[in-house]
Amino acid sequence: MLQASNGHAKLYYAREDVKNFIQYMVDEHDFEHIQLKRLFKSVEQQKSVLKAIATPAERKKKWFEYRPIFLKQARAAAGVKFWSKNQAILKQAEEIYGVPPEIIVAIIGVETYYGRITGKHPVFDSLVTLGFGYPKRAEFFLSELEHYLLMCREEGFDPSALKGSYAGAMGMGQFISSSYRHYSVDQNKDGKRDLWNSNEDIIGSVANYFKEHGWRKHQAIASSAQFKGNANEVDESNTLKLSFTYAQLNKQGFVADTPIGQNEKVALFVLDANKNSKEYWIGRHNFYVITRYNHSHMYAMAVYQLSQEIKQQWTVTAQSAN
Image 1 (cartoon, rainbow, N blue to C red):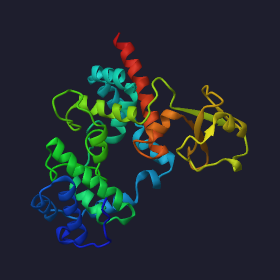
Image 2 (cartoon, rainbow, N blue to C red; image 1 turned 120 degrees about the vertical axis):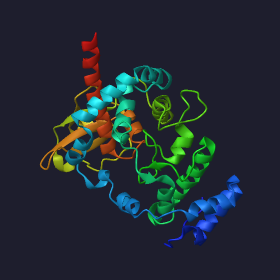
Image 3 (cartoon, helix red, strand yellow; image 1 turned 180 degrees about the vertical axis):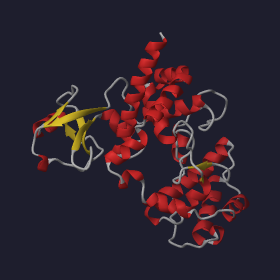
Image 4 (tube, helix red, strand yellow; image 1 turned 90 degrees about the horizontal axis):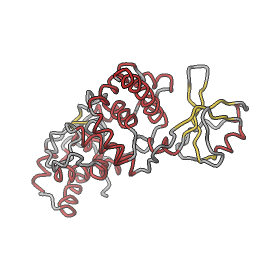
């Protein structure tokens, strides 16, 4: 993938690094030079995108501040409503991909509030702004820009028309361009993968993403834990990888509130319950899979806890209906 320079010229199409990118797309993927030049001539730098990417909520908030954003009664109720409306589709997705409805519903709830907030930023302009103006992650965003142009050609989208998050995530499931190309599915078999308007494609694509990242059917996600050891010796790095066996954590004084095999590989998460106290969680394999959607332990915990609340409410609703 081509590298961007640190230049900040306002007219992107006149910059050497942009000219090199355009030529790369022409040579590597047979794009028309004039088409890409026209696209880049219309780009406006998204200053709000550069500001937003520097301070994501997962980095600047504590758990007790982050959790209430997603764990609200209204969002859980909306999840139950979404589940009810799409019950047959969710059941089919679980049968095909092995991912339970509550996880799929919670992901869509956390990402876009069931389609209410899918993003207002022009995706092409955002990716150009980040690829050619955010050196820290320029390589990643240039790759996503490449995938975006290929995705638009494959799916018949107008590159200048789509809107999404500040980082270029799109649709109800907020797929970045590379994920859209690799993991989205045409679940309703209409010849296109539509993550904005087709609930079949949206639900199937989220489920397929988890399956492709190793979701294990009918296995636990996380366990809360009690701690009976020395608090000064606790590792609070919150590393996402499954770095311990449960036996090792048990030896340190952690006791899970649900059964875990002694040799099972797990992760430890220490969260700020409030300003003065901690809560302890043991992440299991499927918790790690959730972090493949967003590499944040707080994000995964929000998804997990919302999924449990939605499942509980759904069960009560289904029972009362019978």
